[in-house]
Amino acid sequence: MEFTHFDEQGNARMVDVSDKNITSRTAVAEGTIRVSREVWDAIMQKTVKKGDVLTVAQVAGIMGTKRTADLIPMCHTLNLTNAKLVFEMIPETLEIRAECTVKTDGKTGVEMEALTGVSTALLTIYDMCKAIDKRMLIHEIHLVEKHGGKSGDFFYREEMK
Image (cartoon, rainbow, N blue to C red; front, side, top):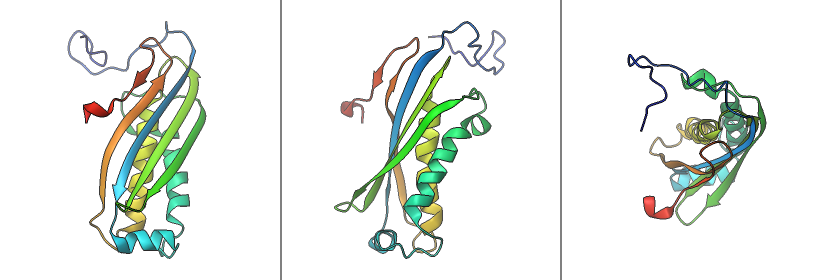
């Protein structure tokens, strides 16, 4: 397998996508944060002093998708056509699962944008709640699926865990 982000001399480079076709591309990523009962209750009752945690984290995640190329050196700047971030509350384990779906019509995929969106949302939850309890655990951030482009479709398999 060839490493596409290095030239013949081993220097880092952005992949040239000039000759690629514009196609519809979608990526979905997810990740989870486990919190204490005290943090969970504060989020659910909307008593966190910094504000409505999930609303702020949702906006932060969407903003993160749009700023990915500013954070990840070899990412192309993309014109996103949609970015959506939703949360699933899992009371049995005191976890919040974030799922980010990103779409574009372009020459390169949006996997990094979806992963950055999830990461930014979960980090925002941590930041807003750390005054209550710093023992939150962010985990399982991964690409769930992607569609479009030369490499085709990808679906994460549970047995990979």
